[in-house]
Length: 133
Picture 1 (spheres, rainbow, N blue to C red):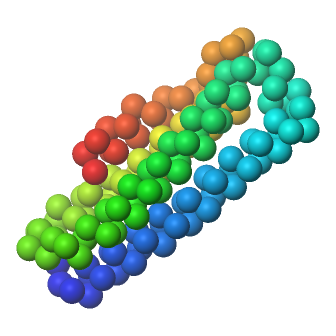
Picture 2: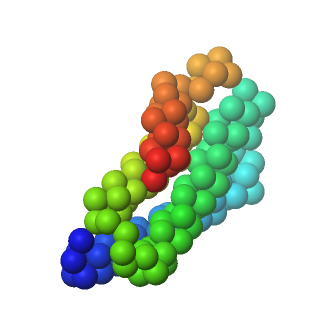
């Protein structure tokens, strides 16, 4: 991987990490707003699954965004690392940022009798991508 591609990858993950933090921390503010307004859609006992899954979406999204920032920070410290490994790690981390919090959010969006919706099935592939990344 040449220096230009490595620099673009570094900048991409810094941007993705910071934008991800902004998005998922904003989601946390929206959840706090729903809580503060005593929204039945969020706080009702029958929606406990939704509240739990959306909190997990917010937390996991923020943490995976921090991992993107850490990944970008370490890219410059390992110049001898093969380019293909960096690209695969990058793609896996990007997939994890979409699938893990997205699975939690979609699972909480459509709940069925206290059970999460089908979006929860995005978690296993997202977790695998995060592990590989």
